[in-house]
Image 1: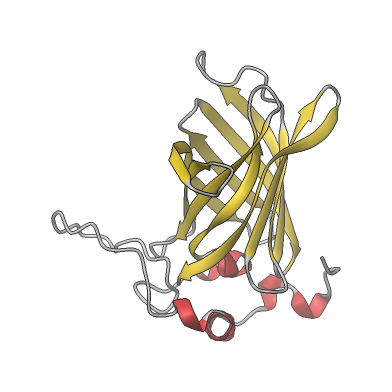
Image 2 (image 1 turned 30 degrees about the vertical axis):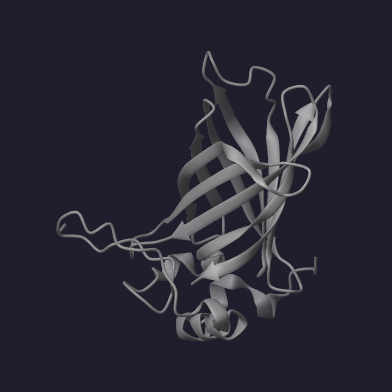
Length: 216
């Protein structure tokens, strides 16, 4: 990934310019969005994963703007015994005009032929970023993990995070150590992410995936 240069500082991006850049990069997904719940009117805006629809993205979130969308693809994970497995993932990063992004991830196990074998881990949480580009990411998972990450933009297309607090429930993965995550847009504009965990005193791969934007 490239080094950060002052002219690429996310804080200096004009909002309209940033949205236009995103629209050009992901033309095929521009007309799609997450569906509204439609179960009754609420006095606040619906979440949107499409920067051209719904409320305007809060100016404070420009440094995270490229993440907004619906992403789907495949990745590799390691189970509690250290065995590698393949999974599919849908990741939705959306907003409602406020000073945070919503984060929702669903994964499913894949067999050796790439066929879905049923649901796996889910995560839900929030991303925030300060005026000085300090990122806060919090999430809870369906397998009993509550975690806080702090980090910063690596450059205008990548974000580096490190866990500051990892809590596991009684029935959760007891051997889970603190971790690091990197999210970044690849040269093909797919979203790649990597999660590494501390095991026996060293960081080891835990989960990673490459996702294509399907909406937003």
